[in-house]
Length: 231
Image 1 (tube, rainbow, N blue to C red):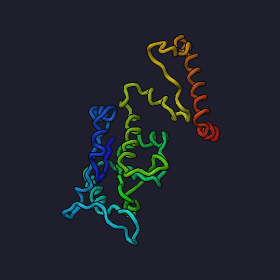
Image 2 (image 1 turned 30 degrees about the vertical axis):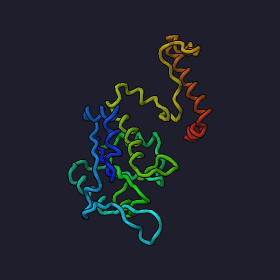
Image 3 (image 1 turned 180 degrees about the vertical axis):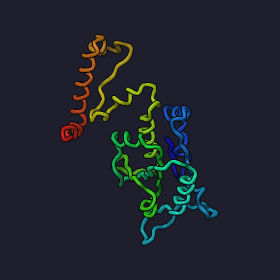
Image 4 (image 1 turned 45 degrees about the vertical axis):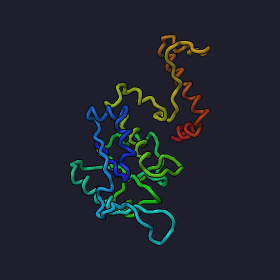
């Protein structure tokens, strides 16, 4: 997979991309992630990426030209026929695990990170294929939301995780929250690991985990059970 991140603040995203699973995925050659500084695609000497909004009002609006120029360079430098151009915005479709699985099957993802009040609407109309939100709240820019989506997607690429079953049993993959887990020691400060997990009976362990998953979902996210029934 090829992932391009277009941002006026590249240092916000570079460090997390050099850690943990995402770093290992890049070293394995399973994903190629490139960060593009939007200011490199400006033409004025101040490298301005924002301006006042037409019609007045508070805040600044990101200019269209740098985004268009950057996308021209990205698309001309790749031979990947199809791609998804994602704009991270509170107004977008709320991101979930189903969407993560869908994006993990793509070959090329381009993330446009807004900042300030908004991005010129012509960028969205002409370039964007998907508008995605990570929740009903507003952050300073789209950089952190883009990293959230990238992290969720990259770990689903075949070969990224050493144990692929780990991702398959995550919360939300089956419209349920995941069950509780335990490791050594068997007892700590008076708290014991459930006997069934020490039994060696894999059938009983599987049933226990499903029941715990169902119970946890009912207690914490009953809305998931409702959508599960509707399907």
